[in-house]
Image (cartoon, rainbow, N blue to C red; front, side, top):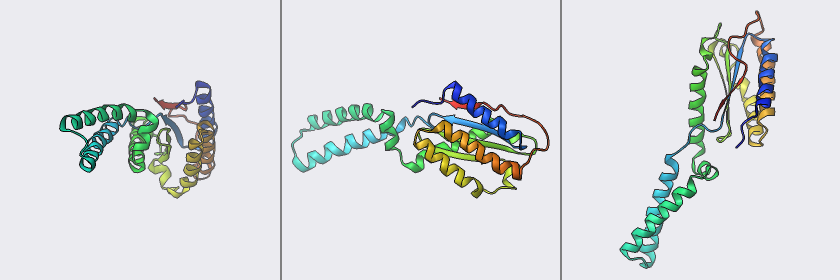
Length: 205
């Protein structure tokens, strides 16, 4: 999974700069390779399958001696652990709800870590993407949420999510930033020239 190059990251920063000229909102973008390493997932699935499958085979056929059963279980566990640690397979083993929950938690942590809750007028906006989970979220501080409800962002998030799934992360960022800008310049128009937070794309590898 390739994150954006430095040149592509500059394009995101330039899009943010253009939007912030017309609004008091402070936009920060974060791109994570994945929300979690899910280390326990391969172990959990490998343990369950290694315990259950050879046991079921032995119960149905009686073909395995006790020693052979134990050897098959251990061998299965080791092979499955290695197989399930392949990122593409690991992701498929994780329920969608768990993946999105982890990504959502990371987005909220980033909102705080990037100091979006300390902007003048509480006008911070986080555009967050986790590529492995194909997850997109827009979080806003109370200075904006009082003027725009969550439904205002749903269409933008849905469109960006589709682009991430299609591997168009850069275009998705630019389109999302511009769409947010159209809303923000109407509801949170610029009253002063300021730039409290960096425009650069924050990349979490």
